[in-house]
Image (cartoon, rainbow, N blue to C red):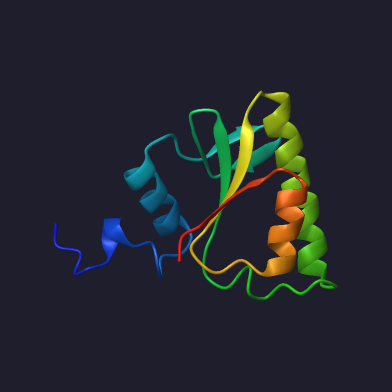
Length: 115
């Protein structure tokens, strides 16, 4: 299993399901599941998470429709996680813009920046 320097050591450049698989292979836990009518990318113990990769976060600006949708989406997932006695986290393999980090911290959403 030669990953030529990438693979398990670095999630950089992985997108979508490949990044989600890297998280499971590296950190363990369970893959995608549904709760409260929402899909979650996975859970590790009592931490439920959403994985973001590629350019998703880069494209957001403070006044964009994407940002409004992201906040609504993350807020709903946070509420569902809390109702199930879980903490909620965002795991990203790209830099997270500062305004996004501030919002996440304010709402007690854990941040893992893997870049």
